[in-house]
Length: 309
Length: 305
Image (cartoon, rainbow over all chains, first blue to last red; front, side, top):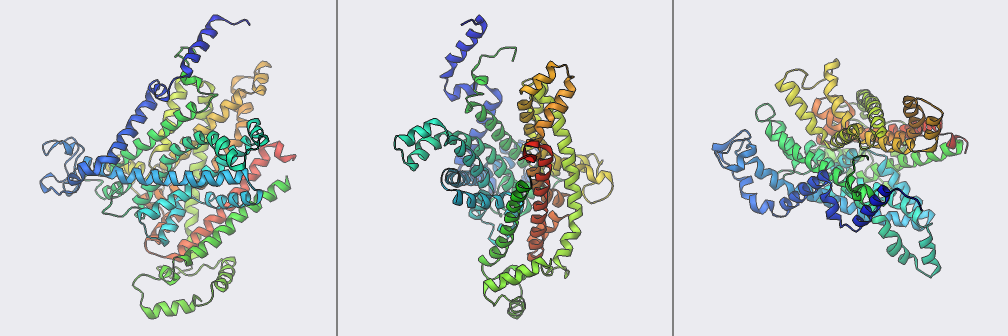
């Protein structure tokens, strides 16, 4: 076999890096690393934020009313300014992280589990059941998600639980479709035939052979959907039919700050920025995940950085 | 081809009917519909009279048939707040939303095709990386926040554009820009992927080999084939645009169907909500058929099936 030495060297380098754990790959991509770190920081806020800053986020301080960002004379918590009641912006943002993130995450996980399960059934089992499932998902998908949520929340009370269910329902079709498409393709592969020939049962094939191949794709969609659902929840809360005060989410904070736009712009600006950073991080991370989990593209991250790409 | 179109139309019709049924039963699942239709402070007599007049004391299946009859006549009841037929109000608001959505989609598609195609021409290049981050940011930005920040900067601080309302060109700039962001961001990524795929194919190599100019290769040979996935995603995004329209119309005070719906939800004016859903669902039904027709026109493989 004739090969130029450069190519073999590159292949060797790839071969060495093939075994790299995922976190080493993450370290090699600065943008994805930043996104992951930001999301990790948000996770910390979700877990301990309300415990650490719950008091600061609710105590009124009339001497510190409407402080602009950058003022630290009333303590470093006022670094992002304060609202008309003198509550620290930063503390409120941190406390609101829990509601914002956990509503989005729960909805997306719920959608993934239900959508993935239905997709497996629609793809692998019957035509009749499969068709019924697909038509139902058509109905949900053919309708604008926000309108669907608005209508359902009109009839049910805008509680956290209802919000999660509505958001999950609007996201189920995307998982369903992807899972079904993948299952339809995978079930024709040789290893599935082999397992069937060896007497593997349906459940065995679905759980041991098909589900593991579909899972990485679903995880990639999960991160994209996390961003979408967060935007949807923020939009609903902004419109006043999502989370109700005294509970707070970033979307609700933007809505509340909107009334003070000309006097205290930071009240609406920073919560929106927080949403933007979180969704952007999720999108960047999902692009990275898509490359890592795709064997055809993975070399892009494993190969040493060479000038001629 | 006719069979393909017929099958697709049946699928879309199925969704439309499903939605009509869902609206009817959702309104009844949550308990007595009089609570939905009447304001919370309505007296007991009004409630009884209302229930009798609209037949809520009859069996559900009977109610469903008369509901279907009313829907087929386009009669969805009277608005509770405005004392006018709900359908009339919705149809009055629709042109505004359609104008907004149409302009947005034309701009978003044109920009996305141009930028996505250029990005795919040199994958990994500077332009590709910049447009990649920009399109991601566009797709991730919360539209209501962009709308408010736009008002803050261009209306409050600089005084260049009106804060809200309908009128000449200055009134259109901010709403359209906000609405374009998300479909543009998502479409750029789709166009880029589709173009990458098309540019690495054999027919592009053939075209280059026979000496066709690069511009023709990109915008004629490759784009023609990338069109299919672009049309599919653009169709979905147009449906999704209603989401954005709800928010943009609310923030900028446009009398479109999105604002009408949110106002009706907040004032608990159910007939309007119901009529708006019906009209939207029908519009989406027609849009889906239009997309299928475009698909058939674009792809000879479907035409000759």
